[in-house]
Amino acid sequence: LFRSRATSAARKAAYYCELGDLQREYTGELGRAVESYAAALEAAPHDELTRAGLMSLLLHPTHKKAATAVLFRAFTRMDEWQRILEILEHRLDSAQDDAARVAILHESATIAESRAGDLDLAFALLRRAFLLAPDDAAIEGELTRLADLTGEWRALADARREVLEGWEDRPTSPAFLSSLRFRQAELLENRLDDGRGALSLYQRVAHDNPKDLAAMSRTIRVAGRVARWDAAARALVD
Image 1 (spheres, rainbow, N blue to C red):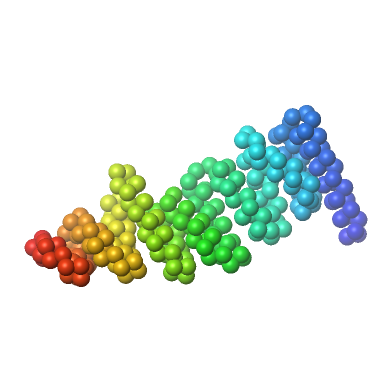
Image 2: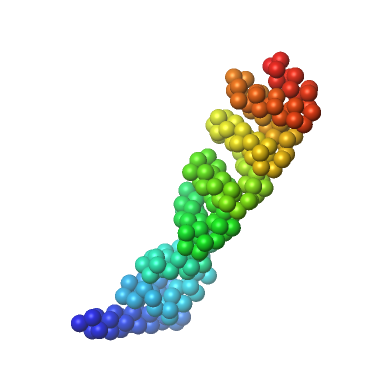
């Protein structure tokens, strides 16, 4: 019975694959070709000929999204995480908005770390997610964790700087930017030995939030460390 079902599935996959090839190569019915290939992979998700037909449709902007979705379902069903990572850029191009892209990047970073053991790739993917959604605390937390594991503190600092520069004029919560500046200052001070850069950010946070005692105390401490006594005096007076 199992052999009979396997044979039946293989025949069904072959039929729909050939139909998809005919629609793609000869009749130009690319939308229907995607549907035929989807039916083939539903019967035999590992079929490489069908996958090849779908991969060729990734070059067609109109049908790329549908073809990508079918391939992703097949790869997920077969637990082929390497292939899922291979179509990452196609999935991102087909995503409807930044929220969807962030989810895809986060998922791919998890695969890169847990399945491939590639922490550098996982960090790079989460960095891209962070640039799209810097106010997502979970994404930044994961990115910071990976920076610790990989030593990519400079890359994390550069990503935060890019956000701070790019989001300055956006209608963003001032509390979010102030909090990010403070974390950036801590990183510069404690991980990159950049006291002057940290001081500048602590000063900005203290200026924007006069009641923030943590920012004021850090300003005084770092100002003394880098011999900026004028900055320390201003912090005390203010």
